Length: 306
Length: 249
Image (cartoon, rainbow over all chains, first blue to last red; front, side, top):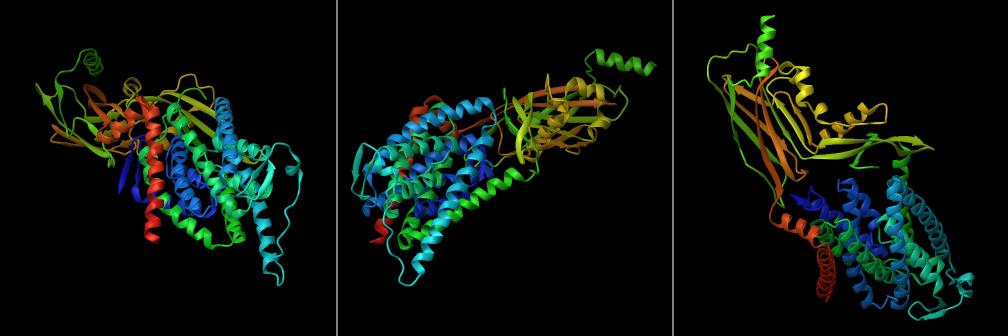
């Protein structure tokens, strides 16, 4: 059954959209990533104009993250204090990111930059997580092993403005989480994603937060950053397609609930290794597209001056 | 020689010997939520005041053109091992939809010069002025190729059926990804590759109902529209969460 999307101005199969939303929603609930880094390229692939895909995806992430965060709040696995600090950084970052995005758009080649950003960041984070969690699993499977590693004291712990984050069991400076928030905000605006796939590893490895808290806290921050991005897109570019968003989020919110429950049952190391594999797969696909000669060398852009 | 003179005379004065009388299957195309594309049936008759004066075979050409929009065609090239957009050509005038249906292959019923003047064939309907890239032709070819693969540009050589040299009908399929606006339908009548009559009409293509309302709201009241989208998202997120916790209890 086809449906015509009023803003995207294309006709798409309804069940395809529901299915895509559902699959990405399950992953989103499992890993605490918004799912945007998967959904946005998928939407390009089914023929949604990129500008509409990015803006609508932001709106959809609000829904799936909200659904996910409620599940986490019930289990008290959200560090609201840490989330707020990350959020302040995130809003500043996404403001900068949109300015940077428009500047690069004026120069042309913004598409290439977005793709390269994806390849570099996904590749880096994916491989780091993969190696780390593989080591963790190997250690855990050794008989008599599984001695909890003591948290390392690195430069992060020597900065001023210390603050107590009780849920995370941390007493650290607010500067690193603020910077993580800014970085994620910038990348989120450029790449059109929530930024969870960058924030989750940054929280685990840089801030030293426990994995169980990381997912809920990341979702909490993503809700607000993507809501902010949605409003910016809706008021400046008029590219939020509410019909597309509703279809994606119907599948997405249900998927997120299922995903959250699967996530609870899985071991932290397993969770991380699967996320790493997924990140690497998307990275590989994007790198492949950049390296292999495309079947159609030409592409059409909206008119005017490039 | 005499023939040439008569032809020139015919070109000079509007030829009224043969005239088109037209009918359309629908006056407008309404884009609704379940719009999956449409088909427009164009039918008509050829009215004759007297015996056919001009010699040559009868040709009927039906064109439907969507609103013109400039478009940028970019070409990828390999730089440092990766494929990036390098050259680009701005096409100043390119219809968002263009269909040409004829009763016989176009070159058999229309001279090259007539095509140049009237811009009937798809190649002629696209104009790019001041292209700086040498191989600009390959860019316009690419534009036609890409749009044709989306069903937006169509050339249908046997798309018009003519009965008894007097009645004609053409069925033009329109895809779902149409741009809103006034679509111009033109019906040309040719004799011996020369145009003897032209009939023009417009078919408005517009969104209706919910599609219209959402589109207007998004453009006229973007802030409200954004808030609406966000509240739907929050409500859906909360709803799913509540539904699942009830389900588990």
